[in-house]
Structures are given as structure tokens and as C-alpha cells.
Amino acid sequence: MSYLNGVTGYRPDLLTNRSIIKKGNFAVIEPDGIVKNVIPGFENTDITILGSKRLGATFNDYLVNVHPGGKNELGFGKGQEEVLFYIIEGSLTVTADKDYDLTSGGYVYCPPGTSLKFVNKSSSDAKCFLYKRIYEPVEGHKPYVVTGNMEEKEWAEYEGMKDVLVKDFLPSGTDLAFDCNLHILSFKPGACHGYVETHYQEHGALCLTGEGMYVLDDMWVPVKKGDYIFMGAYCPQACYAIGRDEPFSYVYSKDCNRDPEL
Ligand code: UGY
Ligand code: MN
Image (cartoon, rainbow, N blue to C red):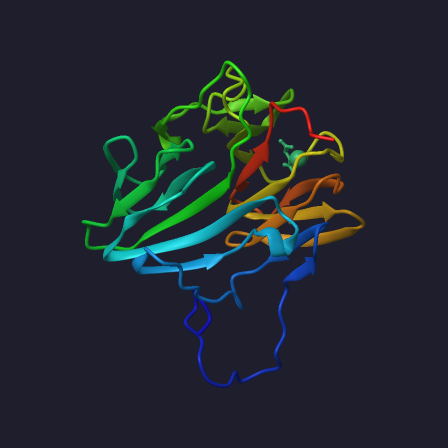
């Protein structure tokens, strides 16, 4: 069964889909067509794997829909894995080093050695974005649990543009202990990146609001709320926000603060 729209049986029209997969380079995955995956420990929770090694990413991204009573008591994140869990809608009690009651916008980062557990004590679904990667240690620095609420954070102007705004999840800009970050980038309709980026780092992005025209390598692709975008290392990337009313925004991950191994 399709993950979000619950489609079963025949459709009244031709089978078409906007998803584009260029493994290792970039991918756009639209909601129609993604499926539910079973992952040990996730109970009464619909989960789908978006970014993964099989797509060419060095991280995993998941879209998680925790039903009332849904939980993970087994713990997610083992060994050198670091995890960031972001609640887009709904509320959850999340356990990392201790319990946190998180509402929409809430998030928790678990460094290696701290696994993530959660339970949905509310009567509505909680829709979440989950990110996991292998932590790269650096001598003299140790990452720690970070929690907060993105809805309470101030926007900052992005690279000198008044109508492009950014918020950061982790203090990676000032603390070398962190080897990655998640950000929310928001473009007012008509706004765009200042240049086509070409960089070593990878991104997994989930579109939260609005619509955009994204250049990924040599293709211009229309994207909108609900789409997932993978941008591999060195994939040229930039966008124009389109649509009329809503800003085009997405949450995305980025590795940082490390010298690539030879
Ligand atoms: O931080 C970034 O690299 C970000 N500006 N990339 C992107 O939005 N595609
Ligand atoms: Mn980028």
C-alpha cells in the first residue's frame, strides 16, 4: 500500500509519477509511490526509508508517522550512530538522556551511545523526520544531547538575502564536536539561492511548505510540499521559490566540520 495516500487497487488513469532517481547524484521522491517499511522496534508507527546507502547517501532519512499509542521502546541508534528526530506535526514523549515532551517543531539530537526512544501519548498522529548517520569523532571534542523547538527559534537572513531565511538545529557553527547539522531554509515566493552551489557535502531535504523550481545537476525539477530531495556530493543545486502565497521551505541535513579521509 502506498505510504501516505493509502492507495490500493486500480487507478482510474495512467500510472505516472514525478519521482526521479539518479543514484549517487540526486533524487526527487514524491509522496505518491513511497511505501511502508517494517523496522524492528517501531510499533504502531508507519515508517518509510527515504535517503539511504542504496540511493548513494552516506546517511539514512526516514519519514515517520507515529499513531496514537505508537512507540519505539527498543531504542534507535547504536554504536557510532548519531540520530536527529524532528517532529513536524503532533506531539511525542521522546527519551534520549532523559524524557522530553515535544510538540510540533520539537527535536532531539542523540550522539553516539545515546539511543532514541519515543511514545505517542496523544490522540493524534505525530509526523516526524528522522536522520541517522555514522558519527566521525575528532580528538578533544564530544557531542552531547541537544533539544529545542524550531518554532521558537529566530530566523536569520541567509547569505545576505532578506527574503531567504534560515534556522539551525545544532550548534555546529561554533562547536566542532558536531559533524553534521539540520537546517530549515525558507524562500519567499520569487526568492532564490544567490548562486548554484557545487559542494562536497550531501543533503537530504524534506519540503515543508510551498513550491519551488530546483536545479539538480543538469535538470530543472518542479518540487513542492511533501517531496523529498537527495543531493549527492558535488551535485550542482539551487532553487527559485514559485507559487503565490506560501514560502518554499525545506528541512535539510548537511555534513560539516571534518576533513575528508583519503
Ligand atoms: O547549506 C547548503 O548547502 C544549502 N544552501 N543547500 C541547498 O539549499 N541546496
Ligand atoms: Mn547545498
